[in-house]
Length: 353
Ligand code: ATP
Picture 1 (cartoon, rainbow, N blue to C red):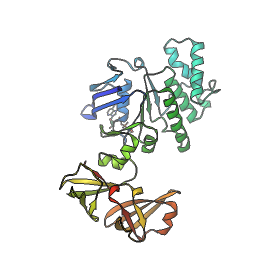
Picture 2: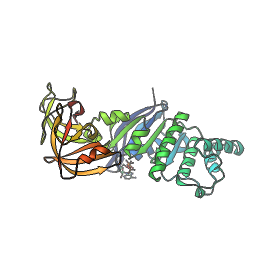
Picture 3: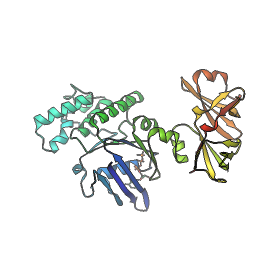
Picture 4: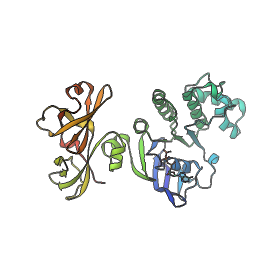
């Protein structure tokens, strides 16, 4: 059952097409993330849902009701932006009370509700403070409380964690998720950070150049990308150009690697140009070839250490390959050395687009 529907949305600014036939359905209570590079259309789509921008064509519906013609404040949508947007001369509690005030809720009852909301976002006893007396993370919690206090039909979050440092950001990711679950509010979250998208979302919508490229659950997006763009955008990957030589034997020919066997798929046709994806963690690195695996000789160029693991980057002929190894294993190899990388056919995922 869909709750939020975007139907055939196009948006042009003069000759420039910012959105091209965007269609999407989200279920009630779902946490959906818009992910994509800068300028791919995420915020424009969000602003059309919120009513701050008008689609050139297409419609937005919540629970089967078109939002067309409704001003932003008539849409019952809660929004949090990166720059908080709190009123500096109002206390935290008054900030949270504001949307209720706009809905003619009496001050005493409204402030009580505001305090309850502040407690939910972990800011009990902070209601009397002014924004300048709060940290960035605390201000963002107030903004979240203000967006949720009037029980919106939809919550829109536009890069809300962009201004926070890494630790606080991770803490807030968990908090937002907890609050979203507790309230069951349907949420659209915009980010260009793929780890954030992976860890928070029920489904991710990948935007590219004003179009939706793929919509899928995080792990499906990671393991079964439908396009080369998604494979390259989500996580580290080895993307190898190849031509299918035998769809029955499941082989494709790639420069510098020769014939490569790939995992079962119904997408390959003989002679078709495809991309073969192997995730770095599905490869092994060794001094000598490993029996029973497909091996290739690689000259190590760079080792990027992450502490518990390392990414080893090197060349097989002219082909750059990346292998993820556990921290302890990396001692066997040095930069500029020759080594073996190996994999099995089930690690080779064929992308037809
Ligand atoms: P970012 O991650 O940088 O916020 P985004 O994916 O949210 O990017 P949008 O802000 O939706 O991208 O912009 C999509 C495209 O539309 C961009 O190329 C942008 O320059 C263009 N655009 C947005 N607003 C306008 C405008 N008012 N006039 C002209 N072009 C615009």
